[in-house]
Length: 112
Length: 121
Image (cartoon, rainbow over all chains, first blue to last red; front, side, top):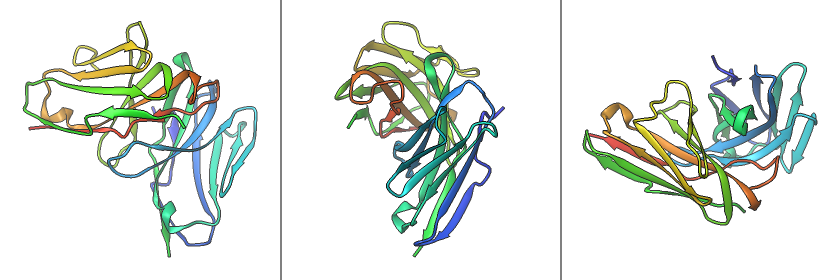
């Protein structure tokens, strides 16, 4: 049973426009959420995170929104750049040992 | 920032042999390390949680006798794939969370190594 879901396996966006990646979770024990960017054959690179007590966190071009009642979060990238093309994983932390569980990922392509 | 080093980056072994993968936190002490595996075009699946000085906690469906985890110090955890078979071929990634210095704190993100590509022939 998937605890972290990313329902869009892929997303294509024009350079300069906004990219919106969505994530849903089922476990109410999660208290911290993270977004990672990953290239093939490399480890994930941390992008941005948000605590469950907040509803927005912004870092440069990246903004994460959390709707706790809906168990939904989203990552906004604006403006999108071709170098942003990668697989983006949503992750959630909680439970014993504060395990981090990953979603299935969304492959983002930013078209020049 | 926090650095996690994973070694080797790539290994090819014969079926039936054992392979050891090392994960080191270079500039912080890691009380907890996590081991993940990733199949092609799939997500990172948590295999086990490794705590320094205690036994690892394995996720459901992961064979603890096949995937031996040792967290001998605050900067080193190892994953040994015993009696490897072709179906164990995968991308293994470790991550670490610290107790002091970089990568620490309640809201510190996990920092990942660059992964190990294991191919069992």
